[in-house]
Length: 142
Image (cartoon, rainbow, N blue to C red; front, side):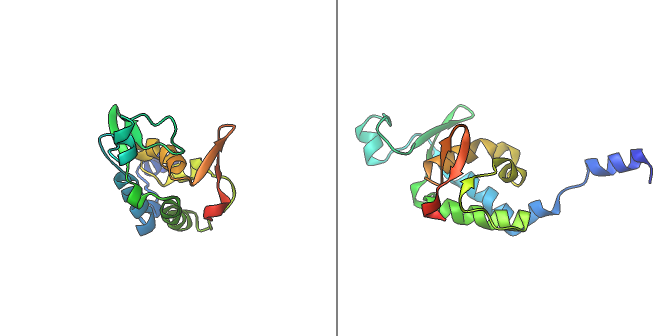
């Protein structure tokens, strides 16, 4: 096989790990983690949408559209469980339970259009905190 054939073959090569069930499930989970429109919980309704005193964000904007986090399915433990399964399936290694989250690795198995949902979900669920531009996994969830 010459160099041109190798390059052409690489263009159409799809990583088979992306079709593994836990990876597909994590992408589906990311799609369903947010609902349409701003949050309508009691606190958001009473405050007129002012989230300034909240520990975690409720309403987000993706592609210019307001969305809200679905609390019933996006607790830190739920996010961690889905992430651990996808991480193990894709990397064949356990997700580290402390330290900096390798966001670049997560993005390898997340569909590009869903990348913008990762950090907001990880922060809002309490899975990570941001320190000096790095996402640190919070050990109490691990």
